[in-house]
Image 1 (cartoon, protein in one colour):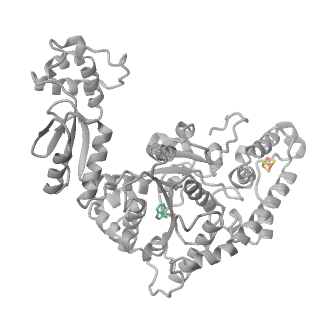
Image 2: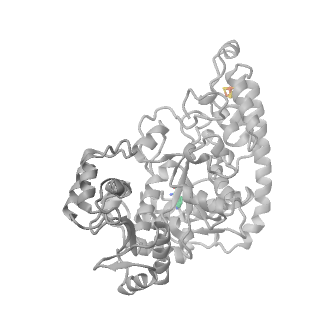
Image 3: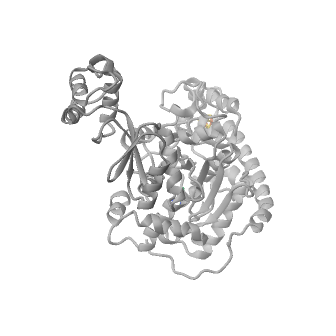
Amino acid sequence: MTDDEPAEHIRTDGGTAEGANEVALDPWGSSTIADYRKLFEEFGIEEFDDVLDEVPNPHYLMRRGVIFGHRDYRPVLDAMRDGDDFAVLSGFMPTGDPHIGHKLVFDEIIWHQQQGGDAYGLIADMEAHSARGIPWDEINEHSRDYLLSLIALGFDTEAGELYRQSDNDRLQRLAFELGGKANYSEFEGIYGFDGETNISHMQSVVTQMADILYPQLDDPKPTVIPVGPDQDPHVRFARDLATRMRFFKVTESFASFELTDTERPVVAAAYDAREEYAEDADVPRCGEAAEWVADANLDAAGLLVSESVRNSAVEKLKNAGMEPLRPRIRFFARQATDEAFEALIEEIDGEKRRYEQHIDAFEIDIADAEDLAREVEAHHGGYGFIPPSSIYHRFMTGLTGGKMSSSIPASHISLLDDPEDGYNKVKSATTGGRDTAEEQRRLGGEADKCPVYELYAYLLTADDDEYAKRVYDECVGGERLCGGCKEEAATLMREFLEDHQEKREEAEEILDSLDIDLDTERRGIAAEH
Ligand code: TRP
Ligand code: SF4
C-alpha cells in the first residue's frame, strides 16, 4: 500500500488526493485521506492485510488493497468459515445520484450476502434531511436510484432487507433506547456538535447507531459494516453503545481484587509459573506471586508491559497476602435486574462464589461464560449485542484529480450517466502519464497516481486480477500509452454502464414489489445545517 510496493502486487495507491495533508475523520466534512497509514497509528484501525489470509475467497477489492482496514473483523470471518450466523449492513445518504464510489459499498454488501451473511441496505433519509438539508421529494427520487443500483448489482431482496430509516419503527424504538445511553457531551466530543447543531441531526446519529445494531435485534451475531473511513467515529460509538447496553460484564480474574486489562496477563503468567515459587503449588499465595512478579523477566515471557504496570500488579498481589491465587471468571452485574442476576447465578455450573455486585465462577471458561451471559441477558429482555465490526475502503480519486465528489460532475461517473458521457469522462480524465510519449516509454507511467488505473483496479477489470496486473505492469514498464489505455478504459466503462442500466430496469419490478414507500408525499422543511 506504499508507493514503493513491488509491481507484482495489484495494489493501488488511490485516494491520495492533492491538497489534503491532514487526517480528520469527519462524517459530514469533506474527508480526503492524505495518508492511510495515519489511520492505523492515530485511530487504531487495523490493517486489512493482517486478516486477508483468513478470508475465504477474498473479494478482489480485498485482494487489491482497496479494502485496506478493519476494526475487529475476525468474529465475522470466524462465523463465515464455521457456517455460523453473521450479518452485513451499510447505509446510503440519498443526497445525489449513486456513483462508482458507492458501487464499492454495494459490492461489499452483496459479497457478504453471497458468503452467507444476512444482508441489509438502508437509506439514510433522516440524515440527508437533517444534516444535509435535502428536501423530501429529492430524497424519494435518489432513494429509489440507490436501491435500484444495489439490486441491479446483485443484492438478493428475498434473503436480505432494504429499508429507509424514517419508515422503520423497530429501528426508531432501538434508536430511542440507545439514545438513553448517550449524552450530549459525547456528541460534542465525537462529532464536534455545538449549540447550533439542529436536534434532528442528533436524532439521525442515534438512528445510525440503531442501524448498525439493527441486524442483531432478533439475535446477537457478528456484524460487519463496510464503509469509508470517515464513518469510523460512528462505528466506534456504536461499539461503545453495544457494550453499554449489556447486562453483565465478564472478565477473567485470579483473586478477590480487580485487574486492569494490562495487569491481567502479568498475573496470569505468575499463576502459570506457580511451580517455581509456591510452597504448595496447588495453593499458590498472592504474596508469593508478588515476589515472583517483582523479579521475573517479563520481556522474556513475551510480556511487554511497562514498569508501572508491573508495580501495580505487585502491589495488588502483595496486599492480598495469603489469599490463594486461583483463576476464575467474574461476572459483574452491570445493569442487570435482580431477577436476571439470580438467573445467571442459577445457570452457572460448578463451584461459584457470590458477592454483592458480582459472582465468581471457577469451572467455566471465558468463551462459555460470554455465551451464558448473553443468553441470560436475552432471556431477560436484553439485547446481548456483540460489538459490530467494520471494514474500510479507500476513497476513489476524482477523474479530474483531487477528490471524487458528487458535487463535481466531471470528477465522478454516476451509475445513471449516459454511457456515452461515461465514455467521454474517462477519455478526458487526468492520468499518471508523462509529458511525452517518448518519456512515457523511457520512464513508464505512474499507475499509482493515475485515476484511470484506479478505474481498472476498482471496477473495470472486475474479478480478473491478471488483467489488472497487466495494465499496471504495462503502464509502469512504459509499454502502455495513455491514449490507448484511456480508450480501452472508456470503452469498458461504456459497456459497464449499458449493462448496469439494463439491469436497473429489470430491478424496477423487484423494487416495486417490496414494501418500501418511496412515493408518498412528505411534508417538511429541510433542516438548516
Ligand atoms: N452516515 C452514512 C453516510 O454518510 C450513512 C449511514 C447511515 C450508514 N446509517 C448507516 C452507513 C449505517 C453505514 C451503516 O453515508
Ligand atoms: Fe494511467 Fe493508463 Fe496512462 Fe498508465 S497508461 S498512466 S494507467 S492512463
